[in-house]
Image (cartoon, rainbow, N blue to C red; front, side, top):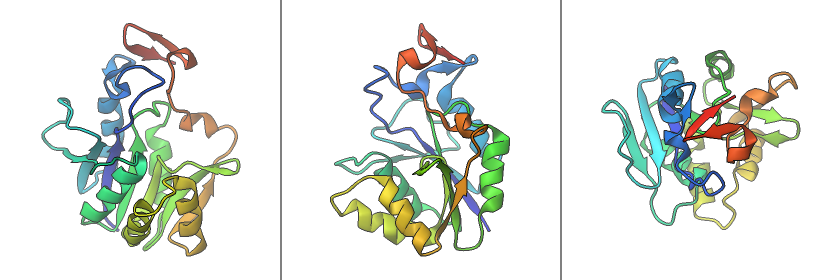
Length: 195
């Protein structure tokens, strides 16, 4: 099995009030921290999904700009699955700084030929830090041309046909999947975030 990494950094950051990708976490921008986690899996290629080309994308990473109108993460995942040349795609949200290299390695270890892995936090899927097989490309494309752009029904449909496994996350590990959406959620001052 082969792997492409995708950093999902195309959010509008409305609640945060500024681009989350450039906010610092433990002294480094979130985009850099998350890209290092993806690089730790030794993917064949790394993409970053964005609404418009940012100035921070490193030379060894390809920016995938959403086709208008952007449908959020659905647009980014659809484009990455259509563009990649590997058997699997691992997506990682830029605003999930609590995720660890061990956790995303475990996700990748649970993937199989033709099947990815989507974490489940209670009854809700976490589709923004997950592994998708190349076989899911048509499903994402169909969803993008529909009227419901939520990822929850796509994940359920993929699970029903065996294209992803739903991986139950223990209560202890659920905090790893927290996202940073608002300044009040964690300590935030001068554009820096800290746990």
